[in-house]
Amino acid sequence: MRRRHVIAALPSLLALPAARAQAFPSRSIRYIVPVSAGGGSDLIGRTVTERWGKLLGQVFIVENIGGGGGAIACQTAARAAPDGYTLLQGYVATHGTSPATRSKLPYDPIKDFTPVGMIGGTPNVLVVNAALPVATLAEFVAYLRANPARVSYGSAGQGSLTHLTMEIFKQATGTFMVHLPYRGIAPAFTDLLGGQTQAMFPGLAAGLPHIRSGRVRALAVTGLARHPVLKDVPTLIELGFKGFDALQWYGVVAPAGLPAPVLKTLNDSLNAVLTGPDLREKLAAEAVEPMPMSPDAFARFIRADIARWTAIARERKIQLDS
Image (cartoon, rainbow, N blue to C red):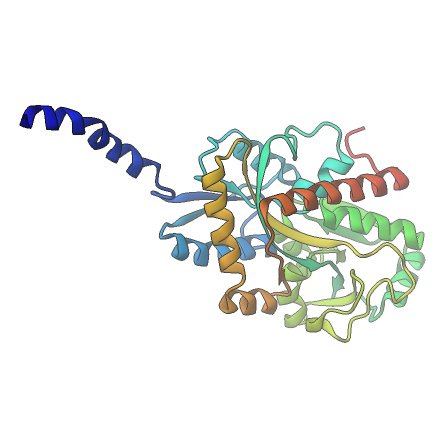
C-alpha cells in the first residue's frame, strides 16, 4: 500500500522542481542599453533598473552596446532567448526614427520584439557651446548664415532623433551645418564641451547637467509648451517653427515570443516602479516624465511613432541608406 501511494504521488513530486524552475524571475536579468555609458538614456536605464530589480528581487545587469544608431544592440537583443532574462531599452531612435529613415535595418522593430512597457519621455533641446557668441535662437540662425560651413553639430548617430531633428531645423531655417555622428550621446557631448563641435539637439535629460553647469547654452526646446525645468527657454513652436513637437522617449522591449505570464510580470512591476514617488521625483529632476503603459498601448505607440517619422522623412526626402 505504501509503495502504491509513493508511485501515485510521483507525478506531483516530479512537477515541483519544474514549477519552481518556471518561477520568474529566478536569476539576474540582462538589460541592454543601445548607447554608450554616461548619456541620458544610460542614466535613465540605470535609475529604473535599480528600483525594478529591488521590486523583483533580482539584479539587473546593465550592458551598454553602442553603434549603428542602436542597430547592434537591437540585433543582440532580438537574437536572445525570449524568456524575459534579456531586455532592451528601446527608444525613439531604435523604434522610431531609424526605421523611418533606413530601409536596410538589420532588425524589424515590430516583428523582432515584444513591447514590454514605456518608461517615459523628454523633449529635445537645441544647445550650443557656451563659447559661441550667440544667446538666442535668432542670433544662432544669423550666425549660421554669416558663417556658412564653419559650424558643425554632433549627434548620437545616423538616424537618431538628435540627427533628424537638427536636419529638420537646418531645412526650416535654410542654414547649413556639418554633421558629425557619434556612437552615442556621451561622446558627442565630449566634443561639444571641448569645442570640436558647436551645436547639438540632445534629449533634455542628457543635456540638462551640461546646461546647469553653464558649459552649454540652451536656445530652444521641442514640444508644445515650455519645460518646467527650463522655464526661460522658449519652444521652437512659439518662435514660429512648426512641427517641432518631437519627444525623446524610452521604453522596454524583449525578444519576440515572450510568454504572456512573463510579460505580465515585467509590465506590472515596471509600471509599479514608474508610479512610485521616489522614481517619479528622480526622473522629473532629469526632465523625464514617466509614461506607464500596457504592452498593447506601448505597441500602438511604437507603430504610431514609426509612421509619424516615416511621413516626415518622406516629406523632407531624408533617406540614410539610399
